[in-house]
Image (cartoon, rainbow, N blue to C red; front, side):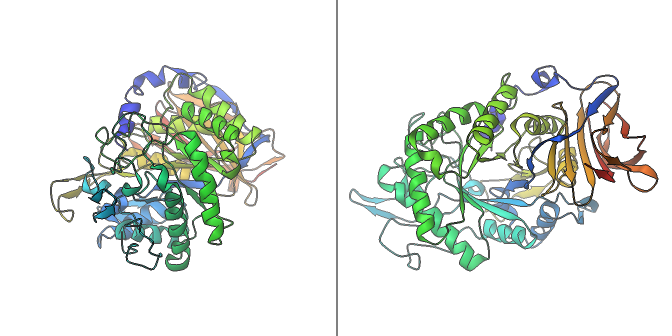
Length: 509
């Protein structure tokens, strides 16, 4: 999202010499993978669908191409290139806050104030009017948001699970009548009158999706960065957003549980609160524990936009300890983004998350983005033109795309996350296939990295002890090579600013 670029503006070269550089491999190094220390079962990799899906979800030329690139492991032809699919398995559906009808209030007729939100970021909601109409009546428009819905269905058909989340309540549920925020910084913008309406909107869409779209949302999150009140001020950022304090969050969470249960969605989980940073998420969770809101939360979602902060490593550990260890809740890193086209900083932050935060899922915000650095696949859009015109796709993919694939194509749902002892390497074990996956990033000089697997009972490698490894960096994009197992050790050369992934067969605990 646009605001992320400001938040991470200081995350450039300074990160490499800052906190993340501590423990980063330099010269020859040995990393011990410890099968006795585990961090849960991996659930998957994901992306939010808005806003890129609004642009391309109904494209006759590109909708299926992007669905295959993102949600399968197929080799896909894109712009004349043969590209490996990322094999993401989580699609986060953005329930919109916009509509363009007139709503009658006691003070008279009102219409949405869209602020400066461009067309491709104005996401249509389904509940048009707070009138007493049932979900079958004209106050509900189930034809809304056709392009994002189309991509949601394509992702589902390709095996993805999905989460429903809201950047803002419907515009008419807000105090400012503006889905991009209040009139003042840190102003709560959910009108108290419409707390239950917001919960009902989410629950009604979740039920409709199950009964009519063939989509069964595993979870519903009613908030998105609700403490980022300096952003959600209507004119500050051209996108949907809403500041909601933690006492009000607790009230909405309770109502959402009621609304879901009333509709028979008793197994649909509630996630919260999608705070922008670890620093914000810690007091949010503590407040929700104090005011009773945490009782209705099945999983904590957090965004990684504070990853460049000096204390991010400590904050990751604190949040994990409070949520997973202390409260016995699940934890997802549900939205991330970096401005590095080569993806190396993204890999560093991701590995740091796996090292200290220990989520069981990790999602990137927008694989297709209008910012050339944030994008894995870059496109431009002219918001002054007809939406059908003015959209142009880059003919190349950023290296970030291939870096993402080195995680998402190899660390798969059902694998057990293992301890490596360093923030620049992650390991996952497929106990059924007896396969160990290791992903490592090196920001030091060319280094011979040795992975010590002596803690495993058996390490054979593939036929003749061959291990496959993939490299992105120094001009290479997902290039596959081989190395052999020596005893219970594997040594690979890793160049500076490179990401390598190893798949080692015949590994048994």
